[in-house]
Image (cartoon, rainbow, N blue to C red; front, top):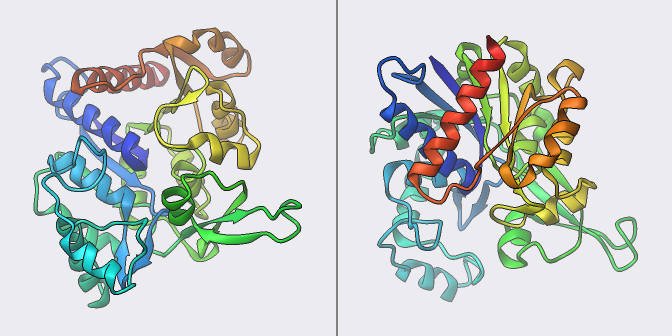
Length: 335
């Protein structure tokens, strides 16, 4: 069996780690046994800093799956130091609100060197994955630069005095506290899905939408021309996992992103925002938390296959159990 996952960020990385563990634990009679996992990773958070190409979501995946992630901070490399970052800030090359660890800088320097030598982001991604045994294959959603910017509303609203800042500044510096009037993916009109992403979708028996930010992680990928069509073109069942539990985001500041596009912070609202595949949307099925079980009947009335399951990924066991539930649900839809 081949499983394709649409993901981004820390929540997506933890879900994929759980899926990998579920495959490792599967018995010979389990459909998950020997399953191959391909992950299509959001690139909308990427940006240029100090002449280096920074790819936060891809690196979260790379470090989490390789065991290099700093689990205490939730991002960056374990055992990190920040001497170079201090020098860069002293020279005024990088802002004080975005610190690059020394080990992390090594990744960015290698990536940028290969990019400047003419390699594509997909080729660079393949080289980065050769260093560690990940147990999955990671593919950037696109090889074109699609950087997300945030429209910051002026004092009198979005139409008066609004300005744009890069998503990383809004997210990291301001902690999403500045009122956002919307998001712009620069370059998306010229983007196409990466070859690796298309191949993964073409071969998939199951497609899972990770519990990642529905606006800037999943939404950015769906905005790439041809991506939604590629995801939904094949007969593989598509099941999403809610990033909202009990009316609150599991991680990060997704509430601010949802507010900017007028979507309620609610597991049912997220499913309806994605839409049904049969109505030119994304989903066949949707997993909500046990805390949101009351939403299942309404979702089913709207045509979604829905189920309430434990969604908290507190450790590897719970993450693996969630991933197993998602695959089993999808296979049930397929049959």
